[in-house]
Image (tube, rainbow, N blue to C red; front, side, top):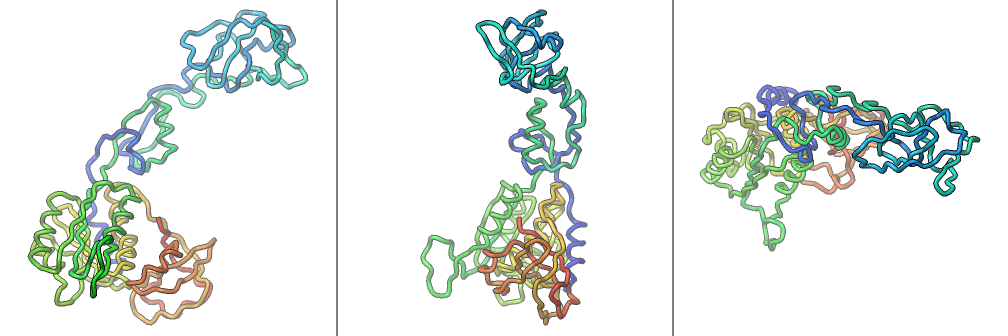
Length: 391
């Protein structure tokens, strides 16, 4: 049995980034850029009005000006503003050549085909004109390699005319749910059976971090069936997550099935609660996690090991940690690292009830995991502890 930090280090050493792929911009949310992105254009590409109003020569602002034309957004041909005249312009539309000021329409009186500007307003040279390239110059660095793409980044790249990007591929994941006692929700629940929540839990977390290629399989507590299922999933996926069957019971076949399937075991059992029986192995560059069957242990291991591994191999960073002061004292009676369901508010975190690994009820009120170190015994109120925020 190894320490939590040792387990994390072993996993880190086995994580290799996935290949670079080119994808459509709209599909790139939460992917990590595999290259720097430079603007292929200058923006705006033409002088642009930031107001609905009239373009004029600034030194003619006191004059009555004839309306020469209108230039709506999308106007395809430039116009030259004539002396003694004004051209109507619109927000986002072009400004005519020669004009050096746009006066907003609220400050203008229109009389037939002429305008008069209200001079009690402070009209400045260059008002409401966005100059060429004032937002982006051509070949400007827009986003650095490694940036995890957010909606604002997609908006920026779209404004520069970019439609595809090169990103680090996200892993495909095979999920194997083991256990004779499991019944899928929607079916009748007979004596001795329980509904499976782990397949739903794992899929929900994977989708939350942008994993879309997911396959779920179920298998009974049988060594040969488990081995065959692991082999099949490893053929088609970058990562395999197994729940149940990893402890030391008579029907816990997962560690042996993994070894029989050609998985190299790196560790089995970690000094932690929940999730002590955790198994980790690899087959070439493919990662295999054997998680306990208890639902809270599954979620805890997802946060501590599985999602951080996904982050590492596809360049993202979705697990956020901080420190906070524990609101009440807590007695820890086990010489293991313990992860507790907590509620973080400001810089204070509350330890919630229902901490057993089979209990999901506290998770409805929780927003983080609190880490108590292996050496901790008596945690006093106000002690600072590391917390991992829920996705």
